[in-house]
Figure (tube, helix red, strand yellow):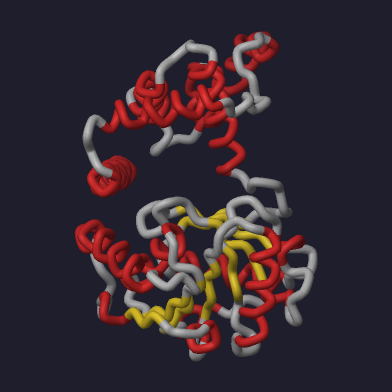
Length: 317
């Protein structure tokens, strides 16, 4: 059974894997006032993690830091066992390699104190296929974030066939406690929910570039200055509900339903030819127009904060 009091008493989090996603989790937990113990086998992991946290800190400071929040609360440990020592929660964020995930979660499970929930940031694998060799698989769940984890609120939580319901409930409670918006999924779905929606849009974008129907910049503008402006306040379903006017979704489906049979979209992935790859890479470089990755990250973070504030003010007002 989920214990809310235990959730609120956690003061130390272990982050295993310190790349873009793992480092983003580190920054988020630090900003929420936790002590963070991180481990990553890469020899330059500590230096990269420090740079990532430093880059994220201005945005987190602007959003508002929790009492006691400090970058000094980060410890990068030389071993996995030292990282999980004393932790009340473990977030794994290793690369998307099934064999690696299986072994790593087994290793984490072996050295983590009993009863501590272990969550994986996986974006594609189900916990059922990752927990197969763990000694106590009942405490393993998926906590799938979105990049950057220190700004995007959503986390999708779901267990595997061997996960106990209490672990899923506890993980969901903990993520809410640290300021996340949580979808607790009823069952495992390949790619989860948001990634499946993103993937459909992404595949159609690749088809349009491959067929010369649109450029990278045109596709991005079509979303940022089109439906993307509606989505922060209302998702695609409510957007179409409003498209039906006073009749709502019922009128929209009755009126536009036949168009669903129109061959507008192609959800099968196109072949990633060298030409398509080059077109996507060159299109992004053209759209970036000299801005570095660091420049674009800072620009993105400022925009996300502005959108979140505007939507919050609209809802509160």
